[in-house]
Image 1 (cartoon, one colour):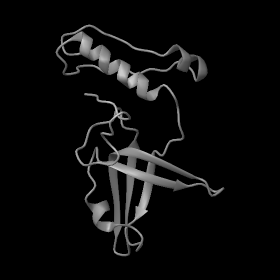
Image 2 (cartoon, rainbow, N blue to C red; image 1 turned 180 degrees about the vertical axis):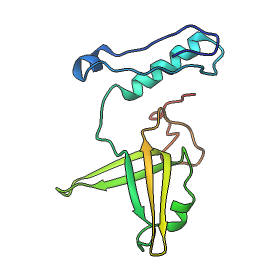
Image 3 (spheres, rainbow, N blue to C red; image 1 turned 180 degrees about the horizontal axis):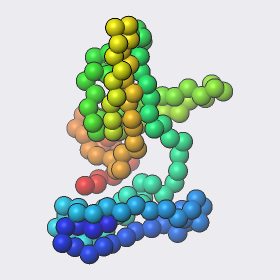
Length: 143
């Protein structure tokens, strides 16, 4: 990762690399004041991605389904956090808190569907009054 006018810094996790495989990403032109801040950002990114989990990359929701909270769906925006429960074929469930990264609407005279693209949040944030974000002793602070 590199900030504007800074030097390239990197972070890695040897245990994760040995377990999964080496992979990386490049991020340039970060708006940070120091290379030390960029190093912290890189370390946070690695810490939140070093273990893999089952992913829910997208979901398509039929807004004409009476079980769907239509007002909530219409009000979604980029970077909103959503809690998704996915029921597996064997009856087990996966519950994930994800961040909205894209909304693709398919509206015809007889249907109204939205495909929500999701991504794991990079780090947790503190949201006043939230029962999910900002739990003392459990949540972390990032920037």
